[in-house]
Amino acid sequence: MKDGRHRYSDAEIAAVYRVIAERRDVRHFLPDPLDPQLLARLLAAAHFAPSVGFMQPWRFVRITDGRLRAEIHRLVEEERRRTAEALGERGDEFMRLKVEGVRECGELLVVALMEGRESHVFGRRTLPEMDLCSVACAIQNFWLAARAEGVGVGWVSLFDPDALARLLAMPEGSRPVAILCVGHVAAFYDRPMLEQVGWAQRLRLKELVYENAWGQKSCLGSSGDCP
Image (cartoon, rainbow, N blue to C red; front, side):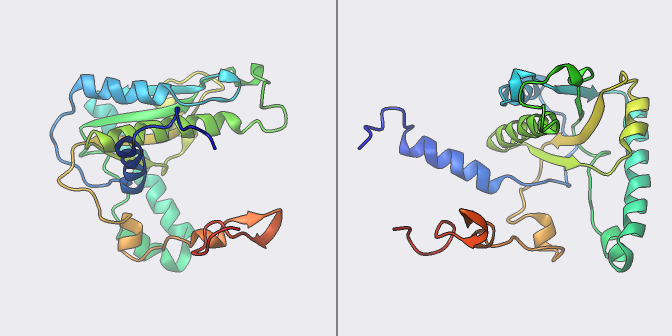
């Protein structure tokens, strides 16, 4: 049996699982500003994320210009309406949802893929999308650290990436992948908001875990114990 010398304490382990379970995609923010040192800590947590070939493809653009924030909100609103049209019969239901907090949040960040990614082949020759996976890991680090600090984060993906890239004067080859609304909140949702309002429900883990072949059920994720 392994001696567990690399294991964290029970309290530390519980805190990790708790922050994972209580992370929320936040859309409601208080107007209070965020301490710049706190924001710097969250960005440092993001920068500790794993990345394929250690390429570190993430770039963060902090939006402090009010007019620029308004332009970003305009882009989000345009895409929100296009999404509603694409949703067909669920379009009206979608338009009633609050899907972002761009105007209200204390801090607004745009997370992007860097330019020149084609030169990074390590781990990307057959899976070039691993650069995007790496950025997603950085965002998740940021998100979990923010939840531990009591700060809300909302990931907004309703925008035209080419239009946002032009707005931010991004170099050719770079690509924005997320707008992050960051700030203080009155409370965190008990459950994901889209689950609360009935838009979708969390799938059961046992339906998503296979063993040895696609669709072959595994004992992991079920209520029973594995042999």
